[in-house]
Length: 179
Image 1: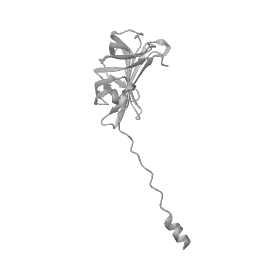
Image 2: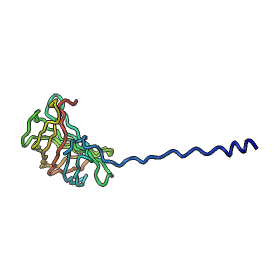
Image 3: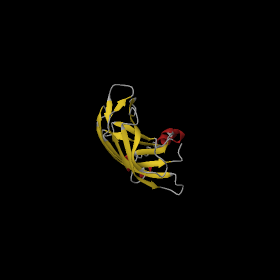
Image 4: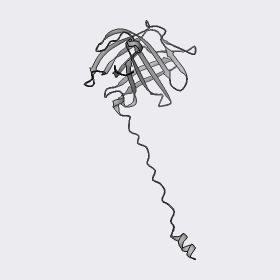
């Protein structure tokens, strides 16, 4: 009987509280407050991209051996079903410099699929840098904006397809101290 009373006094442990994850957007600091990428892709990866700072990942850094800069933009496409990354390499871009018609290499990666598309040489895409604003006292971090124009498709590196990017508008980050 004492055992029955003792068991009756025991109550099941309360269920642990389950807290749903928040669905807040990523902080805009990933690409600065004005980060964006707008383009339409044609061909093997056909989609319209209109990313703003809250849905965009970006990074910019010097290219190896101090040969210009590399800008990377990534985000979800097709209602989140796929992710793509676009990398713009601008070999002739120098620190604190803006201008028109920088010859550029462009690579598009369909993340998780093993598909890569890239320009064959520097003559196919040009980048205009229209804004370059210092972001901090070090003068190493910039908000960089402009447009990319390609006159030829990006060939698939490991296949027979291609992707065309006729025009791409961007605002991202460039950190000259990054490695």
